[in-house]
Image (cartoon, rainbow, N blue to C red; front, side, top):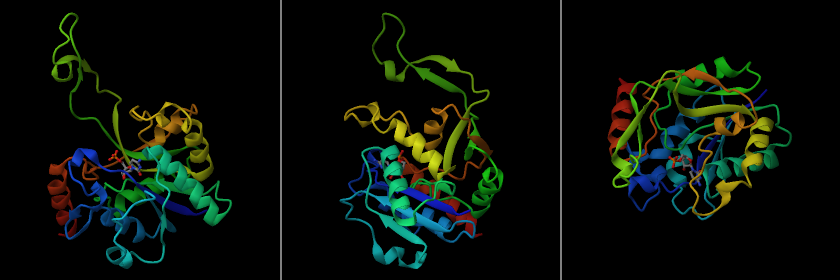
Length: 249
Ligand code: C5P
């Protein structure tokens, strides 16, 4: 049984408001993506690490990545959405490795630089025997508000709270998300030609677990840590650097 990591890194990171794609912004002296790849490449539980880049990516820094070792492989087959990038990556892995349907794939965001070895091992040991697969996640701690407009008052709908969503039983999904190659390929293939492919539509499948849920299956939730943050907004870079510094103490 092999364990592979797949890192989709073909996004542009519009919410960072920078011309350089988010995954290449500097963080603690390295490109942001380097930190996620280092965590995966240095893990003893992962056999190979695949990165999905946009075909036209001109930012990948060969030199900075050289110290990550021979288990790292590039696939230049990114898609229009994250789900398409992952699906293309799964197909690229099978072309290279042959029949890997029963092997595990851990999909991890390029933009989650603070993944610890302990969390990675916790995920693998909790999910390695599961029939479906699973993901790192944290129970929601904050009170959740629904934005909208009251009848007859359509102004400012994006910034008005019209209800409170009960947080009981809600979890915030993180990555890695871990599924067998064959099952994930099947799950993502089913949404490949749906509305997510239509330009202008926001993607409805924003993680692997939601594609697997659409098959009627229930992935296992593995309690994670808030330190495994995703860098989305400019202020997240400072927080990520603080967490990485803490790891080194
Ligand atoms: O934009 P967001 O932070 O949700 O992206 C999550 C991950 O998916 C990032 O690592 C990003 O590079 C990747 N992605 C991708 N292909 C896309 C869109 C996002 O590989 N078309």
